[in-house]
Image (cartoon, rainbow, N blue to C red; front, side, top):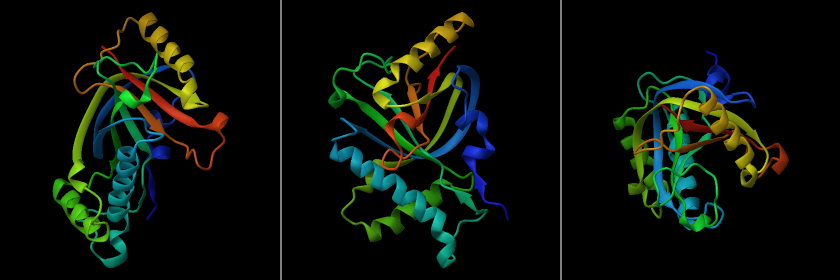
Length: 211
């Protein structure tokens, strides 16, 4: 059976152009961890990454010991994503002066067969291997983002402002307004591994909610 790669199968979600576009984002299943602080220096963020990837690969590799969930199929683990905000709900990714004040929801999409029961099993299984991790911070999340404007940003995370301004201008020209509110945030999807990719070639989907 062909392995499902979400980035290739759902190009509208993961491969937008470098020019802004409008998209209706459907409900998806995620494993998520909430936290705060500078992602470059925060131990909380580092722990969140270990939890998200550990749980995601526990589910993916369950086939190796015949504990795979009902409905399991071959797939590539989807990319890391982040919802970002600060003390104000309407954080739009601009005018970042103190990354220590970031609040974030880091998350990785899961296949449709991952239910709350499967997530609980993964937590129990991974916790046995990593008892030092506080897995109580990891949660199962169904998230419907709805109507958004998005763009592919190429380059440093610190230079996202140019792409964000294009998003804002495009949305306004099309008669939309940004709609940051509870549950609707500045959203980034990380398609490149910064440990293996030159900064100037990093690919990041930037997505803003609109109405």
